[in-house]
Amino acid sequence: MSQLKALSHVDDFPSSPGKFKPDKSLAYIHRLRVHSSTSKLTMYLSVVLALILFLFYLSPPASQQSVPSPRRSLGSSSLSSSAVSWTADWERRVRNSGQPTSNSINGHVVLVTGAAGFVGSHLSLALKRRGDGVVGLDNFNHYYDVNLKKSRQRLLEKAGIFVVNGDLNDKELLDKLFDVVVFTHVMHLAAQAGVRYAMQNPSSYINSNVAGLVNLLEVCKSANPQPAIVWASSSSVYGLNSKVPFSEKDRTDQPASLYAATKKAGEAITHSYNHIYGLSITGLRFFTVYGPWGRPDMAYFFFTKDILKGKEITIYEGPDHSSVARDFTYIDDVVKGCVSALDTAKKSTGSGGKKKGTAQYRIYNLGNTTPVPVTKLVSILEKLLKTKAKKKMLPLPRNGDVKFTHANITLAQNELGYRPTTDLETGLKKFVKWYVSHYQEKKSSW
Ligand SMILES: O=C(O)[C@H]1O[C@H](OP(=O)(O)OP(=O)(O)OC[C@H]2O[C@@H](n3ccc(=O)[nH]c3=O)[C@H](O)[C@@H]2O)[C@H](O)[C@@H](O)[C@@H]1O
Image (cartoon, rainbow, N blue to C red):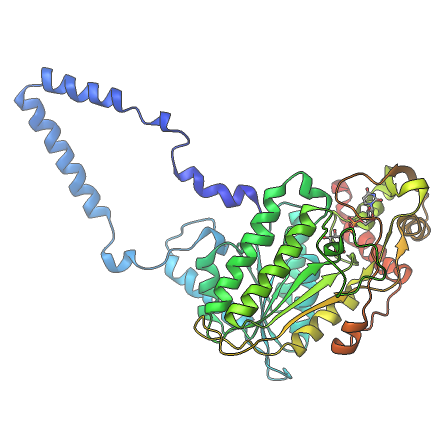
């Protein structure tokens, strides 16, 4: 979430009480009392009266005041005179975007949060392609290059998906979206991602991954009908768990980063909403998802950028120079898992904020089952980029990173039919191809 954006309303208030200077104004009134003549007072009163009448004349009638004005969070920065038509246009765009096509197999209508993000944009396109109604939501924060998010948004727009510019914590906006469209599903992918950044900006993780999640769940529990919710948890919840491969039954009470702790909190929070309100919930633990249109804060992405620039890259290693490894999972495989989670999700059981029966609660690993050392990732990139990396080996810092991840995907295989098919070399080849073509015209921004 953009801190600046979240706090922008603060500008409406005096920054400090010091801005009020009651002592001066009192002295002024006192001077008036002592020195002014009756005629002066009459003159002041007339001026004040004239001012009140003038302001009254300028103010719109009550009926006009009740018309909602365009909101900053809805993507308009200017308060134009066409306030009413702009709002109607916005509603029309949301409604059209959420309309399933006639060839839609199941008629799903999905709200995708984080739609301008990496997984969100891929998933939105996949759903739209098969005819689902898809409405996107994204706050376009500055955690990484906003231009990349806007480029993804343009792709979505071409496919007929409207991405609403707004924040998860904006309850009024979420209520409005649920008023305009009846969502059968919510695919909740908006989050403050990144393991290491949590040490720099801890509050952004609480704001998005905890407060934003609760806000969304509050709106979903009150919606009628309640949507089924599928959301992105993370492999990082396994934390210091050393039993491999990681199974959903393994302990997840030892997070190694605040990021992981907020994702684990999300699993607990969603469970409580499932239990109390009958919301159907599916949590997906993603394992280092990579691919075209990926996130520039992730190692494979900035390694590629730095290798091409001839800049040194830092590779972390474990004790005694042991390798650090990740179960890198290709985006298309993850998207298939997400779609399948949506398709197998049962309906929520509650209505009007009241639970009517037990609702489905599921958690799945979506990994690749083949951990690859980071050193190997770098050698694949060197081969694909035909450039030698300038490598610096460093002991794994205490920044929240864990030494390895490795998914057991049996449960997702059995219940979602999830079968990842892309190995790291094949996936990175597709990423590099995209990277080179996407940035070749923007070399100045490298
Ligand atoms: O699977 C997950 O749950 C998580 O996957 C990634 O987190 P991570 O696996 O740490 O991905 P990267 O940040 O791309 O790091 C990949 C590997 O490169 C290593 N690395 C990272 C940065 C660096 O400068 N050098 C380096 O060797 C890390 O230690 C890690 O082993 C995502 O960033 C998280 O949002 C996601 O939730």
